[in-house]
Picture 1 (cartoon, protein in one colour):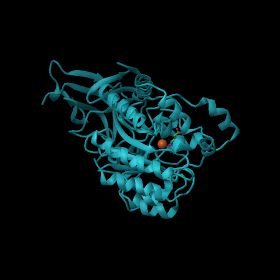
Picture 2 (cartoon, rainbow, N blue to C red):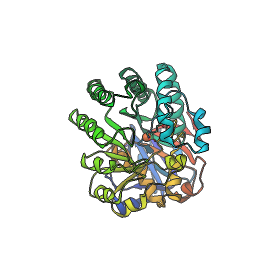
Picture 3 (cartoon, rainbow, N blue to C red):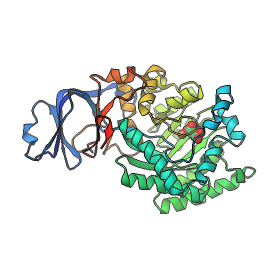
Picture 4 (cartoon, helix red, strand yellow):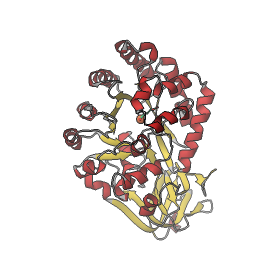
Length: 417
Ligand code: NIG
Ligand code: FE
């Protein structure tokens, strides 16, 4: 079979070796192929390996020189708040003085300030802003992104956010997977009537499902936001409608959100900074992914989730940026990876698994993306590095050189083409 594209002169391909969730020590078991090539046809990987690629060559094959760099699968950022209006530097002074994140929210700021900005932004403004963020992510080597709504807190604006994500998925090289996060905060107009708002969320969910605007539902399960009982009610309704479930769980206070996520078979439980050891035990026996967000710990000046314990106990761990305007205003997943090593004490190999096959599994995409394997989408990143460790060690810079999405060269020499 002839290839339409061949990437050659690869110093080393480093990839998870199976299209399955990798739990515990499996997260360190990567495949390495030195002096390699990758052959691509119609957007899929048809072969990869050591040595000679000539059997895949034709007159029209595009040959791409990897310049003796390492090659990894396209990165997957499985927790972002991509689409939102405005930014929150006006609250930065408070944050610097040490006003806690949830106190800013209680004063009507934080998430609620972004809700106001998002309600007041038209489709085009939200679209252009999110597109710029996606460009930034693509330049960093990210080829699949999960995007939550949650800054409308009314049907009209939540749908506006989800429609923006849908449009971006159509026009941007990055695949955008949407999550409905109507239960992100209690909107001001319902502040004395949370139960009524929860009922509205459940009602809106059905319409969102019917219009195919989101695959998952998320809840911010947190002290003074949605408690365990509220979360259970929303999640049970979501499951009946056929949604996958993701939870913001144990981000700030130990609420037992992780235990609930496991009990309800959530696809992922995210944050887990304050998760209990008992719930981590339950997690290790479950199929729920621990989706950890070290950039948020960094930015909120909080502890880091106990990723080492989670891996040592056999959990499935992924890492994401949590890109949002409040607790993690950065699109940079590579920074999260660097924090994963330096602050969470993960090994570089574990981190690579945590941003490729494990989030692919968490998003229900493990057969398509998350590793370099025959038949999978050719989502491939050439890193300007000669080994994996260097990417995690040399922090705060972008190591991505070239990016292929579905076999198409979309970033070359750090420029979107
Ligand atoms: O994952 N904590 C809830 N949601 C986001 C922050 C959203 C915001 O501050 O705008 C998070 O940390
Ligand atoms: Fe989040």
